[in-house]
Length: 213
Length: 213
Image (cartoon, rainbow over all chains, first blue to last red; front, side):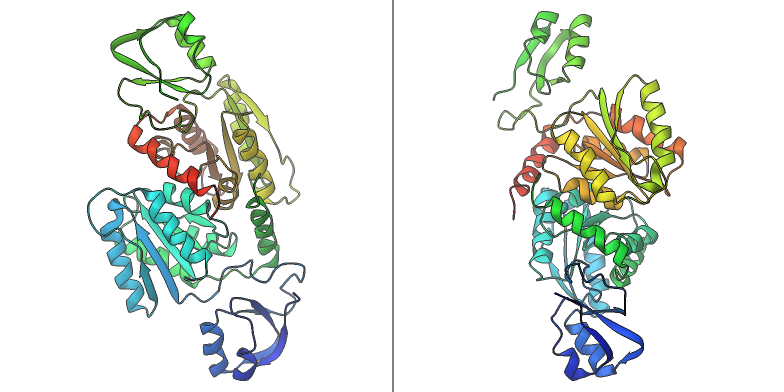
């Protein structure tokens, strides 16, 4: 489907744009304040005209606006998860917590898969998975079709994982980051959109790998 | 298949053990020096009796001994890749280099998939993938069935990715680590086997996720 291009996006236009897609705004164009809210609710990404490669599916890049976050952790990340849920809700985001909530050992692939599937089914705009180092949860989440999971220990990596790799699941290591560091990483990650066509194009190659080997 | 258990592993025994599998050694048991070489050549992992869960496939954990390494990088990691290939060959390992070798931009998913497929087909015992941050290559490699790829910035994470997650592909960020740091990370990663049944059991859940969602 060709990307739609606008000079002005008013509320009435915004309601005609397919949720989760990307549209282009001409140079000097603008979005009305009411339309901005509607676009956010529909998780529409607005980029400068000429940025989108018309040969690419418009749902390749993750939603730029993240309202609904799925989160889960194994037993090692329960405290960090609670701190992040509190932080996300205070920031006005809807949070779906898939567990775990106690000290009993659980298997990180189960938790990571639960979060990943909510994101893959578009029941969440993004996911956060936590275990001791975050590495195993990232591996497991990446096994789910449509998921690009990145383990990030810094805000710089978090930004990079969105801009370059369109990560839609963030993996955190409960033994690697403090709650304050994790909040910074999460805030950066959630607020960084993926915009550049040359990077988005590479996601098509990742999608093709999901077809099986 | 039930795991085989030995009191003594002599050369003649070693030659009967399926390559790439894990066997148990009884308490007080021993392995003859000649058998040790044969086991290494056959990439057999020897663990204490009672460690292996007989309900688990014996090929879940990655080979403990890594003789053949597949390596690849995008344009940003060419220099680091060259340094690592030199280091690996000096260490006596066979290295297969899938490229790239020049400054022309290439797409990290292509390189990561090439390395991952060599490992998945057991044409290499382990793989190393490099791009700017290593995050994208880890995502792409994980899309290949049988691959567990971890992006590691420290030797501690590298050890953890093997012990806990049985990583068979290591992802490195050329902008994140110096060649000396990368050599340390690689050495730790290649020399750390996965031994604990409670961790190996979780790999079964990752394998199940590869069946599709």
